[in-house]
Image (cartoon, rainbow, N blue to C red; front, side, top):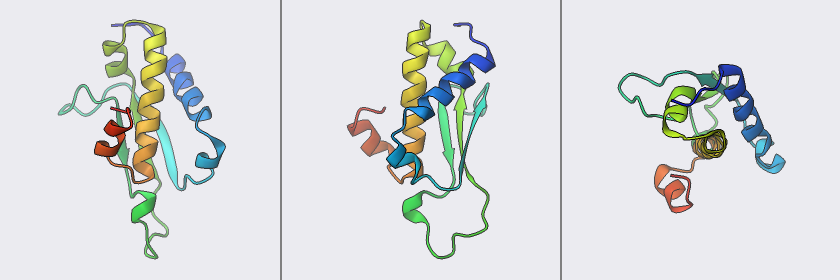
Length: 116
């Protein structure tokens, strides 16, 4: 497995977030991004996870709720990538993928757009 500290990986996630166009980040609402080392045991190769209510599903009832949660998993990414450049690319794809879920874009559409 490729070696990279948690701090280095968190910096890559932060850089990927910084590359999201400002016109999109301004629309993001009530969402927090976290880095964890390992995904849930039942899905050990999971790279990222969105938990929450997509913007497209929020109605008048949506108030006073905890933030949506995007989690990016470090170790599966390091296991699948051969070098730092691969980790950078995969992290960016994963961050965009999970943010797209926040905007209500499903996996089928993401795959069609090339964000597998």
